[in-house]
View (cartoon, rainbow, N blue to C red):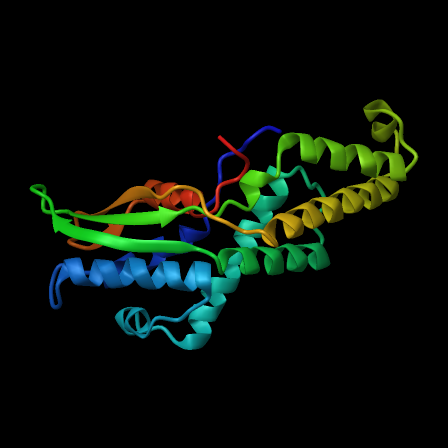
Length: 229
C-alpha cells in the first residue's frame, strides 16, 4: 500500500508558539510544560493544569484541541488504509478506535538542556504502540478482496464499472473490515522497543520559541506507527 506524507495531529501546536517567550519564567521549563501538556492532551485526552495555565486555555478549548487532533488522525488513517469514502459516521467510528488505541501511549521527557545556539533540546523516550504495525499490507489486500467478493465483483476492472453508490457501499464494507482488524490487534496491544526523539525548542527572530513541525511529525510518527518497517 502506498504511503503518503502524514499531516500530524500536532499541527495545532504551531498556533501556540507566541505564548512561549524568552522572558518571564524559564524558557526551558515552559518548553517542557508545553510539550508534556500537548502530548498528554492529544494522545491521552488528559488535561494538564500547567499546560492550560501556560496558554491561558480553558478545559473546553483543550477538549476541542483533542477532538480536532483525533479527526486529523482519522483522516490520515483512512488515507493510509485506502478508505476512499470517509462519511461522518465512519469518521466518528475511527476516531473512537484511535482514542482507545492512543490511551496506550507511553512517553517520557528524559532530559532538557540548553544548546550553544541558545536553543533548547528536549529528549523524549517513546515506547511505540504496536497495534497498527500488526496490520499488514496482505491483511489489507485480503480485506479488499473480501469486500469485492461480497459485492459480487471479480476484478478491479469490474470495480471501475460500478455505480458510485455501489462502490461507496463496497468501500464502506472494506472500511469495516479494516476497523475489525485493528480492533482485533487492539485487544492484544503491546509496545515496540523504546526510541528517543530529540525535540528542539528554537527561538525565532521575534524572540518567541517553538518546536519545528518536522520535529512534531517525527514524534507523532513514533507514538503509533503504521505497518511494520
